[in-house]
Image 1 (cartoon, rainbow, N blue to C red):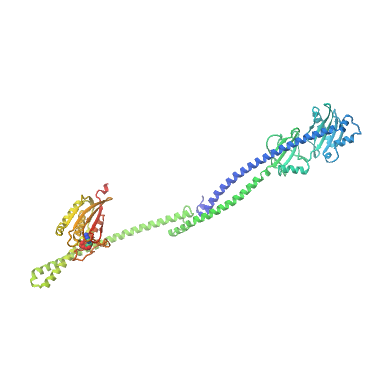
Image 2 (image 1 turned 180 degrees about the horizontal axis):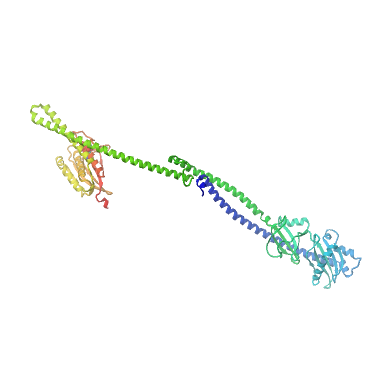
Length: 599
Ligand code: ADP
């Protein structure tokens, strides 16, 4: 395809392509159909031509036989027979009238003669020029007749602008010829009979009667030029071209007429034979043009319906990509333009994405820096706050111990409350520092024995457990997990001490630790028989300082579970719980199995 073709719209290309395909298909069909119609038309014409020619030859054979019989009949009339026996001058008019009767029948006779046995003419009637022209042929015919006793018809002869043909018959007495009668007739046909022939054979046909040996041919009216090929009177269809205004390619069939030297030939212009085939071809071409036009119209409509959304999409994509419609290298139709627009869009998106990633990275770094700054600031502040607190605690203690006897009851109570507040504040700061450490400390995960972790955590809460009359049960062998041992011990300990703490007064705490394998992970469950937690608080309790109870109900700082969540997340795990009020709580943490990577 050339450069212009590449840029052509699909609305033009599609109908053009389907039109070309349709035209090819119709062309092949018309070509094959036309060939078939032509062959069958020619075959039918050949069949008709052969059959009509055969019939005509047979009809002419019969008329030849009749001609001989009538000539023989003339010779046998009593007038002619007597004249042959004794040719008197007085009998001549009557004999002449027998040979050439007045009226239409007599006008056909060009010349008639009576001969004696030595073939000398006894009487002659008719055209003297015909008689002169035919004398030699008559003698030849009589010579041939000498050995026969019936009669003969002879060859055609051109005399002036007429054609004449002879019939001769002997006058036989007791098996011996006594004389002869020779009659030359004009070869003519009435216009009606010629028209009948034409109707029989078909319009445009020509009937010729000829003499193959002498190559004399007539159209039953006058002499005509012989056919331009050798005619034998047998065989199949002859094909030749005739010159002249009515000429052209011809097909013909010739048949010898039995018992005569004549040949009948019927000729038919090939153009006339093939006229129906030509008409079929013309009609087919008109039909083909209509079908082609319809096909292209349908293809155009279908193409438009098909390509309209594509064109809209292309325009939209070009608009988005900021590409000029003709700015696409390569194919310039809708598909080419669409792909160019998409390429450009992809480029833009990739650049935008890279820019975004660069910015996110920079912001994250900035944020991390700020966070670290903030955390270290909080850490140092918290740390520094503890010194004045310790002073408050120490001086309250001194006040109570050294000056207690000088204070009244209210004074002692106030000093005690100052000391308690200072201690609680210290506890809060310590927990905050612990949370802050958990956030900042370097945590490297490695295989950790859960067995070891749980045992160490249990031992750390043992005293509290004993004081509360609690029971802690650990189920089965605990596997190895990927974690950080000090962090994990802190997490388990926090959960155990919560389980011991949040139990209704008068109930002995019962704790249970068990593990569950989960698709490469280990879930560690810590179950208690405590007060339970309503589902709407399940998320809140993991935030810093979130508590659900008053200090005098259950003491605490509200940081324990925040440390649990932070610690587990930093080890790459997750945390959650199942709990409802008064039904105990089941906290879980999930970490990777230590051997998960090797399986
Ligand atoms: P603290 O224990 O210091 O109050 P935590 O962060 O450990 O703080 O717990 C937050 C809150 O979650 C607790 O105040 C309590 O209301 C609730 N809680 C934690 N563990 C349990 C538990 N095992 N049973 C019932 N409530 C619990």
